[in-house]
Amino acid sequence: MIAILTDLFLIRARVICLLLFVSVSVFPSSAHAFDILLGTEAPGSFSYFTGRMLCRMINSDVVDVNCKQAPALDDVHNLTNVQGGSLDLSLVDSRSLLDAVNKTGDFEFFDLNYENLRALAPLYDTPVTLVVRKDAGISSLGDLKGKRINAGYPQSPQSLAIKSLLKAKKWSRDDFSLVGALPPIKSQDTKAFCYGTIQAMVYVGLHPDFSLRRVLKTCNGELMSMDDRDIEKMVKADPAFWRVDLAAGTYPSHPEKIVTFGTRAMLVASSDLDKETVYKIIEVIDENKKRLIAAHSALALFSVDIARESASGIPLHPGAAMYFAEH
Image (cartoon, rainbow, N blue to C red; front, side):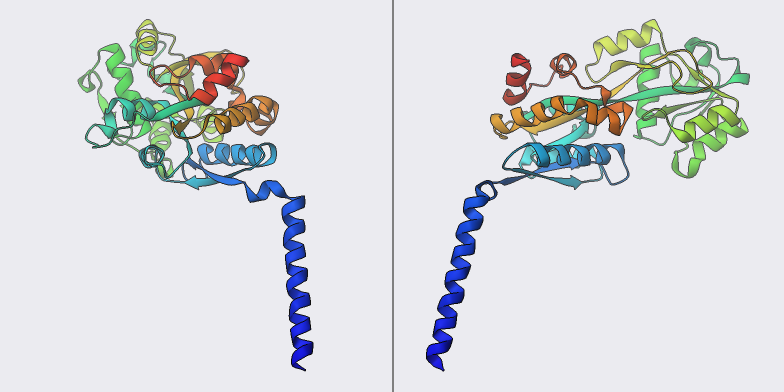
């Protein structure tokens, strides 16, 4: 009986060894694959959606690399984890990226050095859009003075956009009859707009947006072009901003192009991430542009020419620089 059990054990051991040998022979790449972690904003955000797209493309097209998504609350968390090595890549806003490197804004009092951050490529614009009531007598940006505006809650994207706008125009809050601090949570800002409590507000986000389309249609609203000399100067002077044009017909009520400004979502990495891996990631993005555009029109931004010029003030990662030089 003992001899039979011993024989069965030896046969089982030989079969297991054979299966292990076959698996390593047939799938040799799995033995050498390594994980990369991609930081994004929380689930439900466009950053999360884009990160999921990127990881799918990397996993299907880059041999020996397994991309996993790591959602977080904000850019401060993601940039700090890229800086410290807990994340390999992250999608972050260009304003936050420059604040980290320059130790300004939310990073002013951080006892950390973010000089190891490297830019890979921009993936989409985040426009700042000015929405005004048609009955408010606002036909140009200069007409905004004296009106009732909403600036959003402190340090929100809306608040930072209004702050940048006031600085560009050399205005202060005293130049307005009311400066609200309503958040978009539960549509508090849009309800106040629809009731006429405020006459102007900014929307910071991607287009087209269903809720904004409803405001334009039912609440006497229209988008105000910010084709303004002061805004143009601000955009040229601040590497966090770019001019953004909303295409004609983005909303049925606006057959004309709308000129505005905004930030960009940048893919960043630590300088420690190897050049070959970054090169392959940029190659995958470049070769899958149609797939990105099919997923969402906002992801039509990427091109080699735009990527070359989109990291003012931030060093390019050597792997990205090598790809752009060859293409």
